[in-house]
Length: 478
Image (cartoon, rainbow, N blue to C red; front, side):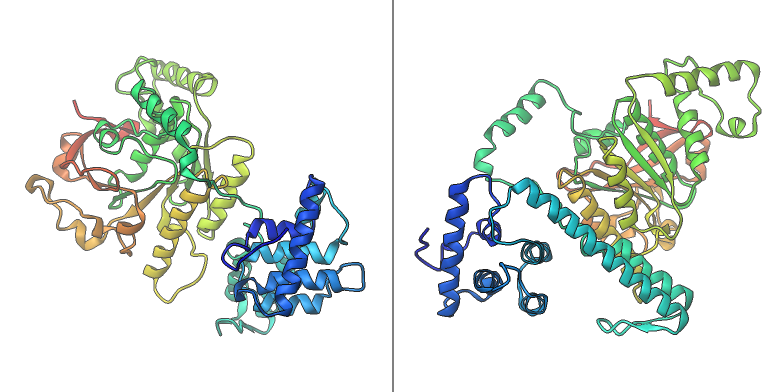
């Protein structure tokens, strides 16, 4: 295999596979071996781009080592320190040269050993963090990388959070969708034909609120949705309605609740289901009467009908409500979602609410922590399920001073800048929804709503929703 010039002789995937010849094709194995020898000559002439010198030096060491091709660990560490490639590739190279000889190895066998190696390295890293936490608890520990002093129980807890948040091995084997879009004509036409035939909603998440769904065309995978309101003005009720709507449409989702207990959310979903036309009670059941065991005899009959339909209807989707603590982070939520995803393919996740979660890393200001959590939420939306993505709906408080200025009767409403503790909302969110509930609106059983941001659409004017909070219902007005 001859590679003529420095502009075209680097093919990362080919080189990585060349570092240990793992291929089901013997000819390709021989070809990649020639490639390594080529690197060997380029290294000696110092004729190779700096960013690839690590790969080349390891390849040369591989052929010249006298112990059957195994790389000395001290040599490897020096190379790693000077390397300018991704951590995932460093780990791959360490696995290749610390554990294999240069004989031809089947790719499936290679992948098995690589998985085992990464698990081993992860266990070693976790053990190191646990040791540092014990040191912090007993006598204190100063992290040389950032000069932060960890001491006592709080310091130990922060170090252990790294296991959840900063685990360097967690994403090693994750893949992402990629490919030349010139090869995507079939997928593009299929998407277009589905829309043309009216087959919408296959991949989108709808709210059941006409004005929102028309403006957004439905929430898409990789979308970060923010729902903002003051305390007690409908964030959780609207979230429960969105979850219920998608559940009965066959979508699968998870609600992570840090403010409201799991039992309260469950009761709200069931109260909302009692409003369905198929149940036969237009006003639904009072959530508080369910809570207190005060339903009338005829209402108990309805309640049993609600339970039977909601739990046994095969057309409904999966809806998991997870109670989280304030020690949980966006990272731990991501991990829990991946665990659930292995059992049930998920379409959306609701976090109620973001500001009650713990930051992955402590910052000097709370605003910085919340902005980082918003960025993590957006990353979750983009990267979940190996890059397939998921709809992430975050509930968020509005600024206290902004609440005193909004007056729907004068068409004065929140803006995207009114989300509390952050300026990141306007950058990270794909869709932002604001809610407002005043005494006048309460008397009319109405809830003011406005789309504050739609990344790919126009912003409609403020509109009103009908609310019946007693039965956890929010819907179209009229």
